[in-house]
Length: 230
Image (cartoon, rainbow, N blue to C red; front, side, top):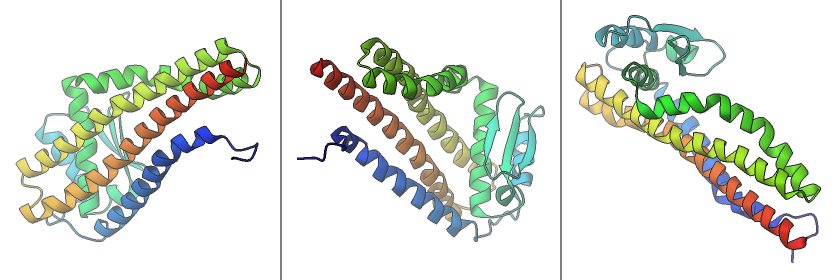
């Protein structure tokens, strides 16, 4: 039915791949739409971040401009890193993204359990990502089930990390909307736009988690097929 070089288990990844493409397209479309729309506060991402950090007493958290183009909170040095287009702009996108990262800073300050778990898993996940695919490839190629099992175990750490990331990101987005509304930084009619920005970003994490789960299921199938051939 399939050419000899086709791996039918790859079809397991198809829904996750389609969702990933959809999520990336939606993020780009929504971010570009609202990066052109000014927020009513007139505050830039940097100004919003500094104001919120002051309001919530996070004086030890610093705001930095990240010219490499990504937005994230770094718990190691307590910095909110904002891309230039977010840091310098006073748009709907910039205010939503900034508030989301402040949400992570609040999680860190409060000891939010899922953030602590994710941070604890970072070194394990890095180690697992380096080992998983080589071990799985060699184990299947050489028909060594022990290597395959270790590879699957290593990849499981990646899956757990992706799953724990979901409540962390959803909670940060929920906090973002709350702190913007509570402090009068968005008008009621801006809520839908900010919510659209945050939901579009959240969908990329859902896609990543689905891809990880699909890959793990695929590896189990490949391991089973290898055992059957033996």
